[in-house]
Image (cartoon, rainbow over all chains, first blue to last red; front, side):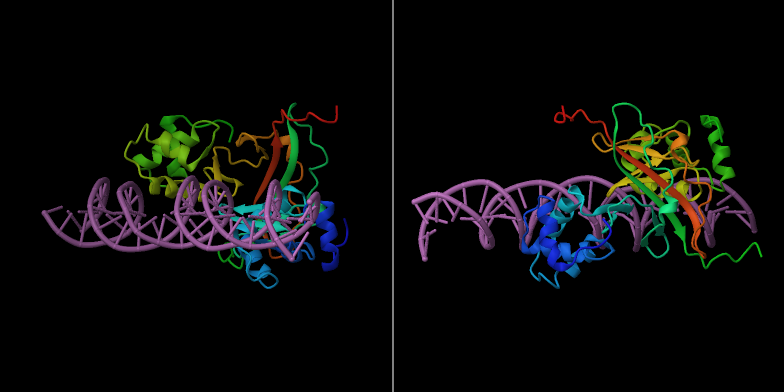
Length: 144
Length: 144
DNA sequence: CCGTGGTTTAGACACAGTCTAATTCGGCGC
DNA sequence: GCGCCGAATTAGACTGTGTCTAAACCACGG
């Protein structure tokens, strides 16, 4: 997929994924599916409330898991207790800035290893997570 | 490093890493550094108590963070709220079986992409995490 | 023997995420 | 329009990881 859907296309996107559209789900979709973002569940909740003020935390979590299971978004666990949700589902690596906690997509050139690594028999590949942990590093004073 | 240290070598290993040896730390080291394992903090705590029955949870967490910071072990966050500690610190990819929750080391051939990907300027690479999420899959009934 | 700095400790705490049981919603046959 | 039913949503309790704090402890040097 190349383009992000517009708001009016969201209902179709959910349908196509086999997900009955509800107001709450459309609100989550609007936050996560219409532009490239990396958000925590909590940030999603906050943003979604702009469109659906009464949505509950549980519903956001349910919906995130649902979307993730259906391949509409991608879960990225960057630290223990810190999960981000990525609009982009196509295989790609991530930069994670350990100082700022910022996640960003890495250029495809950094995702070389994938293809189809031959696995031990009986295993089927679900997903490949590649996280390049970086430091934005203003600190490198010694060694001068 | 090729071999895992023996129990009697542990004190030297800690010294070399700049870590004052204590009974508690030696106990943790014994569990994590003398053989290839992938353990959660809780599993470490349980096993450590075989050698140091009165060690506290806080100390185990402190020590795990300390060892990790000093490059003696490696933290692998496999799921939100599930962190495993790996005896092996050399760069390598992991298999994570999402059904059983088992983590295992992948052959080096699967870690092709590394080397030194040229990063955006001002970023310095801390660590590369590659997790191949697999399913042990007894379920593949249709498509027959 | 005492002081000092690092280590350990129990328990409180913070937070992400899940679960449960009850309510609400939305479509459908009547 | 009315009532029904399964699905979706909800509040709030709950769980499990991991951190924090303040006190106790320990080893060592003076």
